[in-house]
Amino acid sequence: MKPLCGEGSRAGGFRALQGLPMQKINRNAVLALLSLASLVFLLFQLCYYKFYLSQKNGATFSKVRGSQSGQDSTRWHVVRKFLGLISSHNIPVYLIDPLILGLVDKDIEQIRSSPDGPSPECKYFCASRDFTTFALLDKTWKHEVGLFRTAEKMGFQWLKIINKDPRLDGMDDLSGMEIPLHYIFKLASHAIHLVVFYERSGNYLWHGPLRLKQHMDRKFVPFRKLHFGRYPGAYEKPELLHVFIDDLKVQIPKNPSSFLEEMSHSRFLECRYREARAFLQLYPDDASLDAVEFRIKAKSLLHLAALTLNNLGVKFWLSSGTCLGWYRQCNIIPHSKDVDLGIFIRDYKAEIIPAFQKAGLPLKHKFGKVEDSLELSFQGEEDVKLDVFFFYEEEDHIWNGGTQAKSGKKFKYFFPKFTLCWTEFVELKVHVPCETLQYVEANYGPDWKVPMKVWDWKSSPSNVQDNGVWPVDEWDDVIQIY
Image (cartoon, rainbow, N blue to C red; front, side):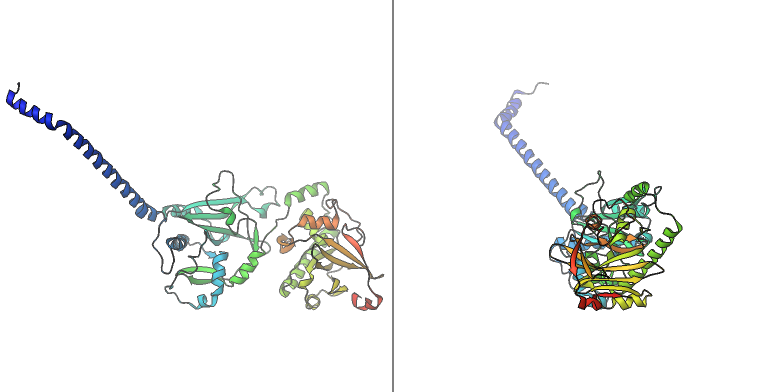
């Protein structure tokens, strides 16, 4: 139906007067309302993420009593959540973080005597650091799948590092077996480094290096800062102590300072099994009855010498032919007829001779003196002897001396400077020079890989030099043969 003219005129006039402005107002209002709604929604999302999701994943924590910032609190809360995680799976871990143990050691008596009560401040676990390090004994736990599932539910990201088991490297058919060496659990801005320790046949604990495989995220944590990742390490079995630190119940080494000292000299070198197998293919091992019996006696003598020196607190290492046997063929050289040890003269103790004699090893000879070219020889079972050489450190080299009894001639054996590492040899945790190749080459020259059954200690070594003659009036003191 066609509208009346008047009615149509009034409507049309109204639209003519107000239609266009009205459209502009509505459009601007709508745009403003949409923009405001979008902003409110965005703020809601940000708040939701910050106060819900972040708390769920451990990114934001309320401050703990005594902490200085939210970041300090985050470290404490991550450690607390990790301890809750491993407790729920009955995993006995202990704290080995050097930074925290260093702080704890200063207050160790107070911490030992403190009852289970609230701490006035977060002093230790709130200390600035990127990660916290714990240790796990492999034989105490085997069920990792459930742990990872729980960890993920708690918001942790995790990384597992595995590698070949070096304890099986000497067995061709088992050398490919891989074992877990390190676990890393990350939550928010903090990470937990869990180092797996294994018991070795020398009755000590060993941990492996941290080597990332190609597919692994190298930015997961600052790996280069990890204290237990660069090298393998060897440790004595620690006695553990249950304590409360910052209101958290943890296990720590009973003597933190001893553990930290041990940690600073813990680097471990594995025997070179692959090279040893190659050597034995070229030069088949002596399997004669005499060789077998000598190795048994030499092993027994080495264990007895290690026990004696360790009880005295004297640091020593495999030297000369014994060191060569370890490095070249992972065994005692059967035609060497002795066991050779080195000791820095600064570690000399007057109790060494009586301690060996008490252990049933009579003194065979004593050459030189503490100030110059000291060496000792002890008689072991039958014809096997223990030679102990004392080393003198100069500014740019290290040397030990030798003495010819019948002439009083002195000899000097030069070595490049070296440090000491742990290794395992004939089921014994023992030191060797970390720079083993340079040490062996100094003594045996570039042909050290070729066995030599004829050896003259006065002329065969590559590093020997004449060093004069002992004055005749000193012979009674510097040349003593028993």
